[in-house]
Length: 158
Image 1 (cartoon, helix red, strand yellow):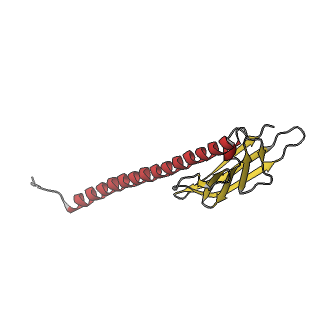
Image 2 (cartoon, one colour; image 1 turned 90 degrees about the horizontal axis):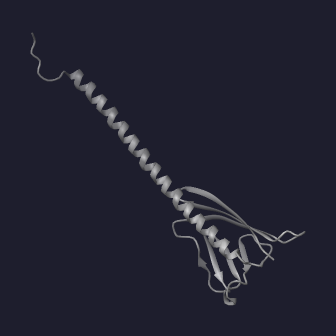
């Protein structure tokens, strides 16, 4: 009977190869989870910012009776529910920001620093044949290499 102590070179190579596969799989899985988490975080930031901007535009149009037509990168709103000094409200696209000016005052950036507005288009339609005036806002937000489009349509009461 041969008394063996230790492992042979072949056994060590096989164990090292198996260990390398296990560690490689673990590292690959960990990297995928971390990368996925980053994408989800950037998507959440863009979603929150887009929702905020849509609500801000909706707030300005809520109770509005008049918009200046045509409107493309600029939306001018007259809203009698606001104090006279705050009219008109002026949304302007100046890449990479959307600004809001109240009553001819200085414009204030509406979006945050972490988000870039890459596109903004307002479409204003005059009232016709019993249909109210309509304002549509379409914009694209970008952050960390991801982009999402947002769209909103609001009808003005006469």
